[in-house]
Length: 315
Length: 255
Ligand SMILES: [Fe+2]
Ligand SMILES: [Fe+2]
Image 1 (cartoon, each protein chain N blue to C red):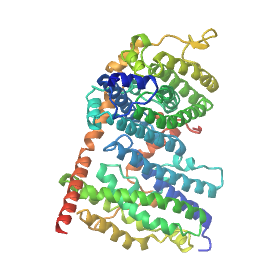
Image 2: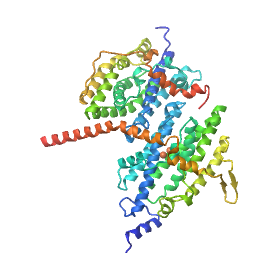
Image 3: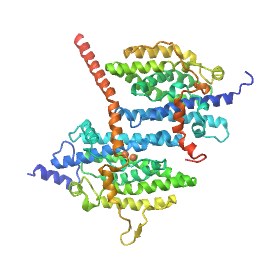
Image 4: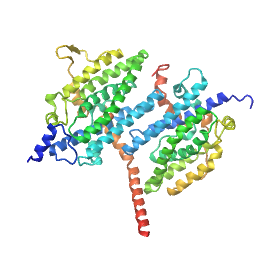
C-alpha cells in the first residue's frame, strides 16, 4: 500500500494532474494558493496602468483593442480566482490579503504608464514575458491552474501581437513617436526581465516548486528565452537595445546579457516604486465605492427569496 | 425642399449618431478598473466596447459619404466641442454606479424603440448598423433593467441614490425626442426616424420599470437642450481634452 504522500509523488512523477479532491501535502496547497492568487492579483492590478490610457487612446481602433485587452485581463483574474478557490479559500479573503499588502502582485505594475508608447511596450514586453512563463505553466501539476493557463495563453499572445504592432506604428512614425517608443522600451525592458524573479540561486520558492512541478522551468531559463526572442524584435523596430552588454554567445547558443539591477528590483518590491501605494489604494477605493452596490444586490436577492417562499407557502 | 442635399444630410446624421456613441462609450470606458466588482467591471467594458464599435460604423459611413479621404478618426479626434453634435445625456459625467445605470436605462429603452425604426431606413448602411446594434441593445437593456430593480428595491441607500440620479438625469431625456429640420426631412425621406413619436412608448416602458423598482417617475418640469446644435455642457470639453490629447500634442501623426 502506498501512503497518500507516496501516491501524490507518484502522480507528480507520472505527469498526472493533481485535482482539487485529491490528497495533497499542506505545503503544496499553500504554495499553490500563494502563487495562483498572486497571479490573479497581478491580472487585476495590471488593469490599472493600462486602464490609465483607455480614455486617451489615439484612434478608435486602438481604443477598442486596449479596452478589450484590459477586459481580458479582468477575465484572467476571474479564472485564476476560481482556480484558487478550488483549494478551499474564498475570493473575498484573497482580495483582502492583497489590499492589506499581505499578498503580492507582479511588481511590474508598480511602474507608471507615462506615455502612449508604454501601452505598446507593456503588451509587447510585459505580456510577452508573461507568456513565456505561462506557456511553461500550462504543464504545471495542479489541474485547475494548468487549464486556466491554457485558456489564458491564447489571449495573451493576441495582447503581445497587438502591443508589438502598436510599437511598429510608433517606431515607423514621426521622430517624436520613435523617440517615445525608444523611451518606453528603455523603461520597460529591464523591469520585464525582472518579472521572471531572482536568479535561481536566490529564489525563495523555487526548489520546492520545481520538485512538485508547480514550476516547470527555472527563472533564469525562462528569462533567457525571453531575452533571446526579444533581440530580433527590437532590431526589426529599428530601436536601440537597452542592454549595452548584450552579446551573442555561440557556444551557449544564447545571448549573454548585462546584469540586472537587483537593487532596483527589491527597492520597487519593497514599496518604493512610483505606484505601489496608488495601485492598492485605487483597488481599495473602487472596492469601497462598490460596497453599497454589493449590499443592495444582497438585500434585493434576500427580498426576492422571501417573496418566493411566501408565494410557495400561500400556494 | 428642392435644395435639400440628401447625401450631405445623411452624412451629418451619421456623424451625429457617431458622436452619441463615441461620447457614451467613452464615459462607460471610464469604469474599467473602477467597477463595484470584477464581473461587473468586465460587463461595463463590454457595453463600452459596443458603443465604440457603433461609433466606428457611423463615422466610417460619414467618412465614406464625405468622400474626401477622411477616416473615422478624423471625426472623433479632430473636431472640437462646438462641432460635436451628440445629445447632452451622453456626455454627462460617469457619476456613481446608480447614475451610470439610470442613464443606461433611459438610453437603452430609447434605443430599443429607436433602432428597430432605423433598421427600416431606406439607407441600407444605416439600416445595417441599426440591425447589428439592436442585438447589443437588447443585452444592454436586460442589464440596466435588472440593475434598476436591484438598486431601486435594494437598500434604503441604493434606493436614494437611484432616485437622485433619476431626478438629475430626467431633464436631459427630452432631447432624445427632438428633431431639427434636417432630421425631420430625413425622417420624411424614409432615412431617419420620427423620434417624437417614440416618446409615449418610451415613457410607458420606463415608467413601468421604475415603478417595479419602487422608484418614482420624475416630474416633467425641466429640460436642457442643445447637443444637436453643438451647445454643450462643460463636461464635453474635458472629455475631448482627454480623448484628443495625443492628436493635439502631436498633430498629423498616424497611430
Ligand atoms: Fe492576462
Ligand atoms: Fe495580457
